[in-house]
Amino acid sequence: MVHITEDMVRRRAEHNECEIFSLEEISLHQQDIERIEHIDRWCRDLRILYLQNNLIPRIENVGRLKKLEYLNLALNNIEVIENLEGCESLQKLDLTVNFVGRLSSVESLEHNVYLTELFLVGNPCTELEGYRQYVVAALPQLKWLDGTEISRSERIGASQGLEEVKRRVQEQEKEYLMRRAREREEAQGKEAREQEGDEERKPGFDGRWYTDINNTARLLEEEKENREAEENMVSTDVDDERRREKEFWHTPCSFTPESRLEAHRHLEEEKKKKAKEKEKEKKPKAPRTLITAEGRVLNVNEPRLDFSLTEDEENNTVVLNLEVYRHMDTSLIDVDVQPTYARVKVKGKIFQMVLPAEVKPDSSTAQRSQTTGHLVLTMPRAEGEIKVTKTVPRRPRACETRRSSSPRDNKRRNAVPERLEVDPSKHTALDFAHIVPRHSTKEGPLETSRMERPPTAAGHSSFSDGFVDDSDVPPLV
Image (cartoon, rainbow, N blue to C red; front, side, top):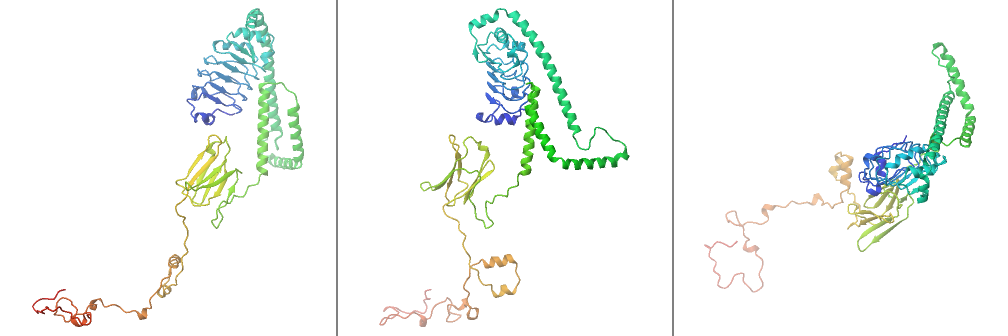
């Protein structure tokens, strides 16, 4: 049994940004719903409600929808028109191809003063004598009945002889209700017989219950025989199933809510069987390789989408235009941008494209067109490409070869570029204390001797003409 859930209503409210409290229109058709529930509490502002082609047997839980203007319940299992008095704004009611046989139930719509259109085509009540005259007289606010406009002369004629029409309708309703009671009993008996037949067809069960312990061996033997018989009759069972399938669809039956439910359940069982057969026949696919073991990124287009990859030199960007399906929900798209490639997952299928230049993933944007549905990825280029530089391995030193080291240390040492080494045999240490020589230890400040002064030009003395060498004057440093 399918129930109306909040998630179902939100998924159907995409046009209202998935908000259900302010929803004015919702379509829940072809969902195999078997009961109307929760809508009158969740969506108080509803104006249009589509519930056609379901399995709803009764009109209920719509009395709080004061703003409801259009209710579509076509192709359901409704037998009585009821519980619509609270829909004060109801203007159109569609009950096409249901099982409304109690024509007097239309009188419950007399309180819906704004009701102008009513559809009852395909219901048993339309076969009753005086059907149209009875409905036109019972609902004076109607303007259209079954798609035909009600003229003024027809309304005047419907009021004439109304009592006689009501009497005939009541008699026909009694006959119909008695026939429906017999149909229900037949449907219940048929269902009980099918359940008994299923139990009889179960292997190892003959309709008797054994409680004697001494019969255990005999039961095991019978079970073994039944198992062997099953293995030998596999082809026969397939033929029997096909024969029963053919009988089910070609045997005539009355069109009732029970027969419609039976057909629906039969179709559901067939779908489940086919799904199981497909699962058995379906072989597991090998996982798709996106990146090879060597680290090379592959181009993949599982959803088979058209695309275009362009480079915008003016804006220094790479633009990927992916032609996603127009009416697909955006929540089914997942985008992942990396420096060297872009990956888009569309309904579980992967699209991957290697980019012509390195991009900035953090600055990239993903936008989807509201008209075409295409996905546009705008990825700005990186300013400089990151390249791996090769390192020259150096020879191990003498001291390093003598001592043991871990593989990680060896790898780190080998990664250092090779350097030139000076021959240690020719190495001489500098004497920083005697870089500048002294005359004696008592001379005080360091000074260069006269013998060590740089030579002057030829013909010129190192002192001027009026220089007097006074020993009392200390030397300049």
